[in-house]
Length: 477
Ligand code: NAD
Image 1 (spheres, protein in one colour):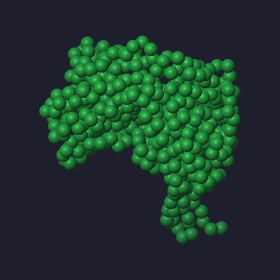
Image 2: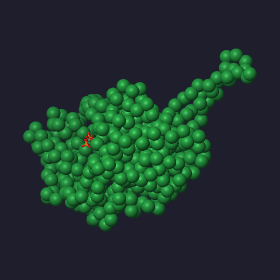
Image 3: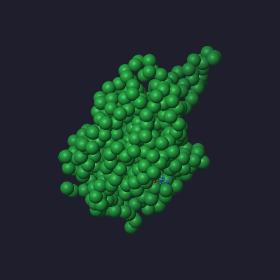
Image 4: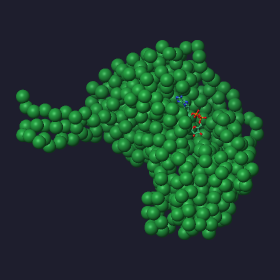
């Protein structure tokens, strides 16, 4: 299986960077797939100048013309889906079926924003005196610096790129160094679709060096970051220091509340596959399972049966239902979380161990009766770890669900309309999905509260993130 050449893309040119770079590792084998060049400081300066020039060009292109180029890029991605998905499974590890879904959805995000960009309406505000006209006009905020992570290499990047281009912004994308192929493919589609030089630029490097160079630059007007809470807080502080607009999509620790009026087997069949998607390396992954004591044992039995039957293997093997962890840091984290929870009294229902010593495979794992003191109940697991606790009352489960500083996604299952309404209101979260799984579509807002960040991607809110309002008032001469 061929893994394509990796390059930087600055001012419409594909570049090989300087002498620094890193090997991209296949997490299923631990072996190198290719070499990723890092941008030099001079490359970053060129990207900044390109973004400045690109913004001057792109903001003058009408939303109608922008949408045509964007739709063309979306069609190219559709045509190239299988090849891009294969490369993404090679460097990220996720199973091919999941990669195809992720790449297949990317053109939908682009198409949606291509259309929505044509509806960046302002408003007319009645004047106080005759002849006074007042407008609130919507304008692109300016060149964007975007930082995207390794868990959804296409999805996290396409949402930032599509929304900023639709708004009329230029963008420098720093893709994930460990899983770079999808960002290269995304940028190639826009290049081939005829996007003017400098409007979209792609760099890789040492993340801290790149962000410390781009964020203070007066050229950059907007920061968008997806990643961990500590890095998000660091970048948000930098954005504040330099007075840059920022969107922060950070980590979560999603509660799943399962009430006593549901069929626990059915709930296990819905939430089980979702738990192990991308080996649990998902910011909205269900992690803390609060199950009413009346249905707890039946739910755990069904969930455990499903989990034990899950075939773990290389992402490109069609039999695999869960791939490896994306990097060895996640294996270390899983081993630490499981040992700590077990030592504090949790029961390992299934899993809990690394699989073999080639690649970074870890068993899908369920821990029950996990005490609140366990580290995994407090830190984002970001892996195939399900933590189960039993509850008895509504108030008790709400306070446990809201105990942590995170507030990204939440899930609830109940047959009662009254309970559904009450839980929807009571959970401190940016998103809640009740009795089904319905997050992260192009047209709906996606974002967190509390330490999970601020701002949205997706929906009209996602476009708003790249627009600013200018007030214009005039009287006839
Ligand atoms: P990390 O905290 O080192 O990095 C997280 C992400 O931030 C990576 O993509 C990294 O390249 C980037 N990053 C790190 N320092 C940066 C800097 N100074 N400037 C710009 N970008 C920077 O951790 P990690 O081991 O890569 O990932 C583990 C943790 O990250 C997980 O536990 C999870 O909480 C979080 N994470 C969240 C998401 C998400 O979708 N919200 C995605 C990936 C990782």
